[in-house]
Amino acid sequence: MTLIDDAAGPDPTDALSSVPAAGSRRGTPPVGRLKFCYGPMDCGKSTLALQIDHNHARQGRRGLVLVRHDRSGAPQISSRIGLTRQAVEVGEDTDVRDLVRQEWARGQHVDYIVVDEAQFLSPGQVDQLAELADEVEIDVYCFGIATDFRSRLFPGAARLFELADELQPVQVEVLCWCGLPGRFNARVVDGEVVREGDTVVVADTEQSVVETSASARFEAEFATVRYQVLCRRHFRSGDLGRLPLITVSYG
Image (cartoon, rainbow, N blue to C red):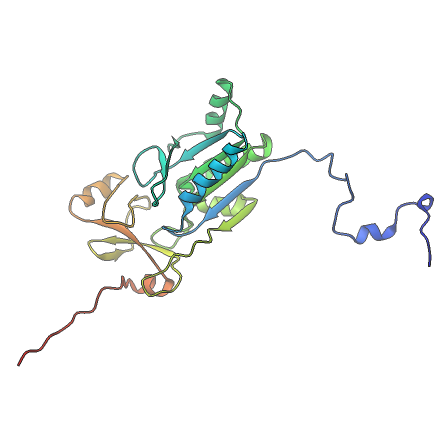
């Protein structure tokens, strides 16, 4: 057996290890994380956002809860299981860094940020969140839908895919009417899937309508707008799973 003499210098096999030596990262400054949890409608993103906020607050951390176009139309995070939480509405021109500065001006520390409906953020606002994570060491948790009713990435979601430290699909499975996993959010107007129109039209999976754009509000006076989660096959065909017509013969 050959013994390695400590005086002879470091063990050359240390270079083969993927695990840093103890204390080797002590000089690295801590940074915040930017995390994006995504999935189709009804998969529990808002519920998870509220749970993350609750868990951090229980440990004495102070958070800033933001939302962009909640389905309720109010400045809050609302989940379909009935949980709600007041939130700060992020406007089109909002600089999220200013929201943190305002908290500092009130003498309040910000340890983490929770953003619901993050797909509606602008790419610039996502860049601001990344800056807060890197420069101010704030943990940022974003929740949202990846693709719009045309199956194309929202600009905010696309930027989150590019910048986030961690991407996590929400694990609660949503099913298409056929029983396959649902991934696509079809926009349904008067019972038909539509593939053209404003990118941002906020409505629920129920029959009620909450609109955000002028053209959508005009349309809503004459039509019922909702969303339905479909698998790829039925999203492409526009098949909403209507009940078959039953013909009854007499005589």
